[in-house]
Length: 100
Image (tube, rainbow, N blue to C red; front, side, top):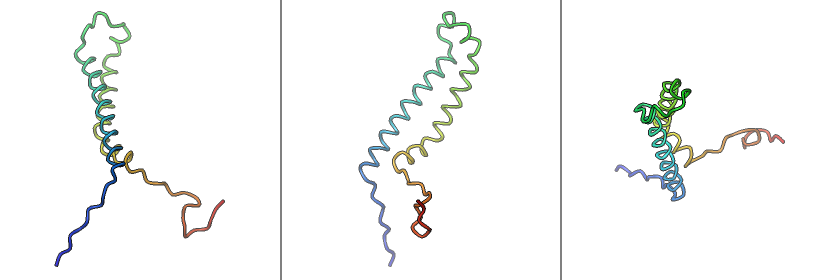
């Protein structure tokens, strides 16, 4: 007879941290997308400083790359924020020699 697998219980604390991280990422991505739309649509171009008009394409490229990076990495960011794993290092191995 097949046995049912038990789903590991996720603590409420981890769920809260994941929810907060998702909200923060969503706000950050929205702000960066608004800034990207600002540079693409050029509202009030006549009142922009000259250096901003000259480097508009650079701003668009940088904001686009940052947005793409955050969108693609958001699942990894949420998992690492909600479930940090301790790193092994000297003195952490119970089978090895104890180092000072």
